[in-house]
Amino acid sequence: MRIDVLFGVQQLTPQDVQGRVVAVIDVLRASTTIAVALSNGARAIIPMESPDDAVTRSKQLERGAFLLAGERRMLKMDGFDLGNSPIEHSRSAVESKTVLLSTTNGTKALLAAQGARDVVVASYVNLSAVSTMLRSALRGGADITLVCAGQDRQFALEDAACAGRFVHNVSKRLSGLDTNDAAFAASLIDKKFGDNLMRLFNTAAHGRALAAAGFGDDLAACAAVDSYPVIPIYQDRQITLLGPDRER
Image (cartoon, rainbow, N blue to C red; front, side):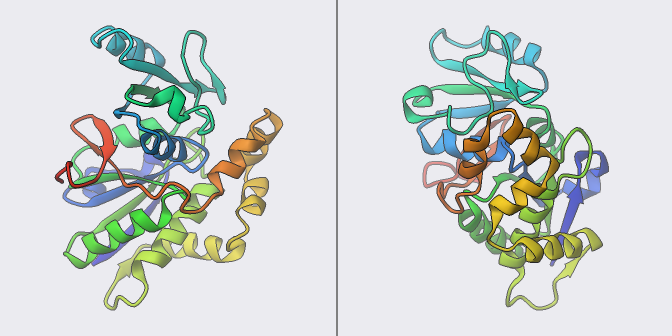
């Protein structure tokens, strides 16, 4: 049994995902927004490489059945319905809609995880639910890769801390578990900040940038541990909820 953490998509190789269960972490904000949107009744989230790809794909869908969402430089793009704020993805906005989502970091990380046995979207808001799923996979013999989306191809403190929390939750009371050095480092970061996630976000460069851009309420939403206890699974190029009607 093995858990590896990767600090950025640029480190990802086919061996890191092939046959493994992969959790993609982009705490601020794509992972959180995806969990919130699906909890609020979105039919599916389709991660897109670029805004242009999202617009092109939307032309293949029935009018009124989809929303264009995402950000560049933290801000909603012109002509899009929603940004990447979890607060914007309310039930009144997304219920029964397919959301075409393009973000700077998170959606690219998801698209890079091709070849995995399962790909799950992980954050603090669905910490316990995803931890249970990963722990079950580990006990079933699957290796785990936690992919931190990072920020503009750089290390992101908040993603590393969240990965460390998952390492702790998934590995406790399991013997014979191997981890890479990044998993150990992520665990140390998690221990340093503990449950004070607002201190983590206010320390992290991207958290400070979001606050300065007027997204302070988003930070609070992203820090609400287990507030959206869902398991978003990326399969067949779309993200839907794992549940009795969704077989893995």
